[in-house]
Image (tube, rainbow, N blue to C red; front, side, top):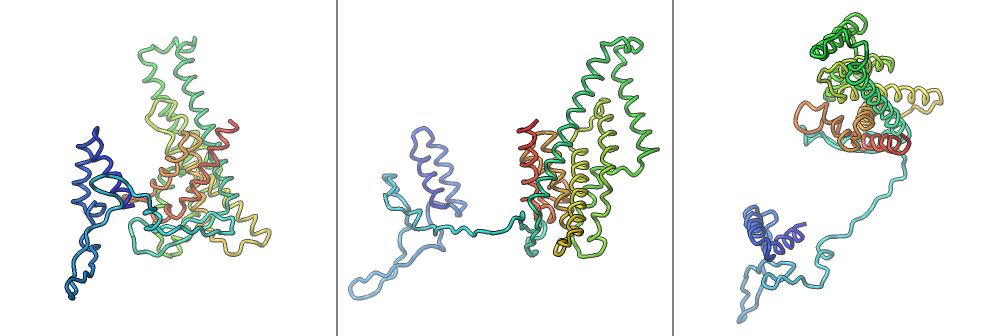
Length: 338
């Protein structure tokens, strides 16, 4: 890496069109010392020169992979000589593995989470379909309320200057009434963050935290109320509803998968809490991907959403591979079939 950096800087500094940029990079790299053209003092080698019968120790000149004066790179394979060949280890398993440590605790031990590819892809596709049809309903609602209705005969009783005020007031009243009287304990993105942001301490409460995710039927009032809120003109984006609905899809599909394994007697070795947590992240990423076409930003948003500080939480970092697989599977279905 250092040799490539050195060569790039030298090419820039000798280029007639960019002498200033090359010179600044050269000075900066020399001051930094990490990628300096002159080797750092710790790497200076000592050579023994025999002169008049006595050994004289002289520091050797810093060596470069090219001639400084001419800028010509020698024909020998200096990169291959300095970098050993990489080895590829083949794994004969069909589980998504990802290992990472918490960004807040660099000294913690490396942890490993396994999630079968089949259930991960199913969660990604199902949650992506939820996000896709949610956005379709948003477009239909906006078209009806803000384009078709103002031009219809029904809107003649409402002055055009008060149309926005009336629609927002009516939508807010409907959402407040339904959420207060019928859905007082509605699952939302707040619960997603609150449950998954807890640090692992090994306690029984931490192990049973995924039980706070309700059944999949609670997804429908969440989506319905968020649709009414957004269509009425309130500043509610689809990100938070998609995170909540997608996580519910992932957790409940994971529970069905675990029950099927228990019936077949093949549930030994499955960590239920970790699997549900992985699929909650995967479902949230898949829903964001299906709704907003975020194949890369969706997983990052779903993972960093639960962090209480800069970087990813420890649980989120462990599930990176599974979340990416779910997002790409959902995107493939949305783009390929719909």
